[in-house]
Image (cartoon, rainbow, N blue to C red):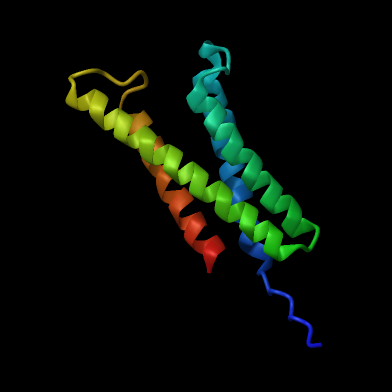
Length: 125
């Protein structure tokens, strides 16, 4: 019976999620702090962060298939969430409402969406 060769994962595949978590977790936590961190949108992000963290942890333990699966799930989850965040901000602007932190909200959510989509593509290749 032939054995399936292991998947070769570059050592750098964990850098993007670790950097993303290091930047987005404190910023999103600070933004959601006044709602007591119970806002459903914040809790949805927490799920994505846990998936990314699990993926990095599995990669560290040299389980690349499981690690990449968790990374893909986390990136997909976060991309969907940030897609919604960008759409919400555009709908607020279209309705004539001001964003709480101004245009930086749209820039941050859009950047997170872009990074999440790149991460998703990278984890699927």
